[in-house]
Image (cartoon, rainbow, N blue to C red; front, side):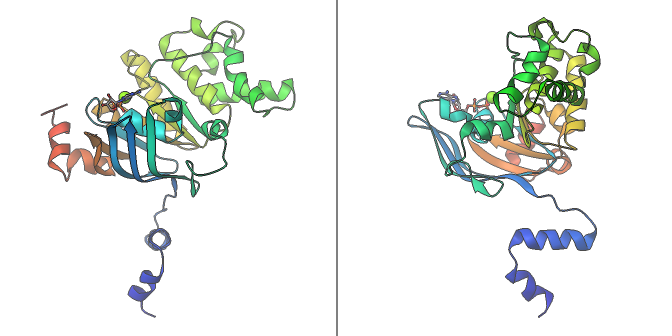
Length: 279
Ligand code: ADP
Ligand code: MG
């Protein structure tokens, strides 16, 4: 059979994989796929038919004006909206090929695999060590103290904060600077072996130097983790992400390679936003 017939018989993912192999580029698997996602708060619809793939081991930035549904969408990805009583999610969110809203998977376990870092650093009122050890203890990840020590050190190293805290592990996490607290929170997320890390404006409470450190860290983390980050800073989206999704009034207006979205947006609304005509 000729190649055009063959590609018709393959599903699009397989075809993309084969094409990428032929072109010598690596096809990215999607860690998460959102299909026709609608979200309501009571009667009010906050998201309308969102379709978005989040590729594995890349940074996907969610941008758009305040109130357009970025945080709402991010919270769908690990069922954080479950805790908001008026909130209803429809459509499918596939993680590892499984619909996270239609499965036996315990949301607590889901949130370990799809971790979250919030806008305001929120370390527990415990020591630095205990902040990182908490999750592994809860999930029974470490067999003994030595293993736990190792996980704590490794997580703090991966979050680029080990050198700053290694001599004060038993002091309160809340005593660190804002930027250090945020890296501690990232270490806490990493400690339970997530596959995906969701970040909702993780730098908006930080000064420019602390922000630069987190951005550098995000770039390192994508070697191992899939990252979805909400940011109101277009410069940040352009610096840290490979893929950008532009939301506007509850709709996903445009999604593409970050370079394309910022240099050659397809939709007039994206163009208007990135050139600062509204926001
Ligand atoms: P963004 O993160 O882009 O600023 P949000 O996802 O926070 O936007 O909000 C999207 C819409 O949903 C807004 O109209 C907001 O008022 C509404 N919304 C968000 N959270 C809640 C909530 N807990 N209860 C009711 N409405 C909410
Ligand atoms: Mg938000």
